[in-house]
Amino acid sequence: MKPSNTFLAALIAAFLFAACDNQSLRLQKMILHSFDSAVQQYKIMADSLKNKPGMLPRSCQSDGSLITCKPDWWVSGFFPGSLWYLYEYSGDDDLKQLAEYFTKRVEEQQYNTSTHDIGFMIYCSYGNGYRITQNEQYKNVILSASESLATRFHPVVGCIRSWDWGEWQYPVIIDNMMNLELMFFASQNKNDEKMYQIAVSHAGTTLKNHFRQDGSSYHVVSYDTLTGRVLKRQTRQGYSDESSWARGQAWALYGYTMSYRETGEPKYLNQAKKIAGFIMNHPGLPEDKVPYWDFDAPDIPGTYRDASAAAIICSALIELSRSADPSQGRQYLETAEMLLKSLSSPEYRSDPGTNGNFLLKHCVGSMPENSEVDVPLTYADYYYLEAMMRYKKLKGF
Image (cartoon, rainbow, N blue to C red; front, side):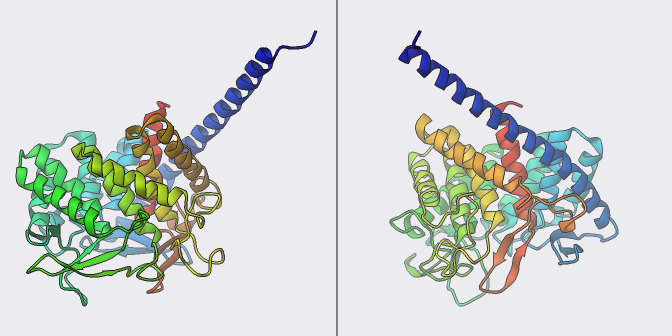
């Protein structure tokens, strides 16, 4: 007896469903394995830092020895933040103690008014600590840090100043969108309208002046402090002023996804979707979805990937998938899943005892300066752990 078309369609659907289910289970196993390995790696890394008072990991040498930084360097908060994610995953009290210990190393940065990166330093460390433990002392540090960051806001420009050096009159970099989460937290936990207005002013001004028609972002915009007029648009860490530096696009995607979450403003969601479209549909995006260090680098495919940009994009897409309509949301999540598979594969994911015990390989800090090229970076690990945690919570495993 010949099977009916209805029966064949049902059989095919069941087969496809089973295949998708198996792929999902494989990814879940990869993530759990990666978390378990990360617990080992970060305990070893933490132990190696105990005899280096005040220092925090930044990258590593070719022989695997750590490159460290002082608490006032912009990446200082990522290691304690990663420890908090690992404690959240494992419930291991040893990791909680390590997270508390290394979070304390950045405490004085709450008073630092010389950098816009106070959000990275304090919110990634104390922010995660407070989210997980509800320790009121942690909240007080975060609120103090928000006051420090607020001193860098210029009402005529409408933005928080990024750098205090260089040729620019008032430089604002796309990275600075990431530090707004600190201000949104302060507005909610201190009932401070000023902090909210600073954050939305910065996000709105950046939306107006940083982006090209295709959704890509410049790295640096410099303003005139008397008029608020744009003086220059540049890309300092990318290939050229008109190129699309990969991590800059990642910061932009994450920043506007977060800003939509905190405000509910449709314009921020629309911008996040536009940036996501630029990244996902770019002809230079490799099959494994891990971007080259610049989407317009002239020597693609013979140049370096940037796993740090991939990790940030992955974390942002998982969050964005929950805010977009179902069809778009599926696309964002499928891309994030591909990134999780790629980053968790031996090509990018290190084995315990190698890579200075950092989790990810093949990151790029700044190609034009030949700085931190094809190395592990502490913030790549942080956003990779965050992406895995977000995915784990989304899927409930």
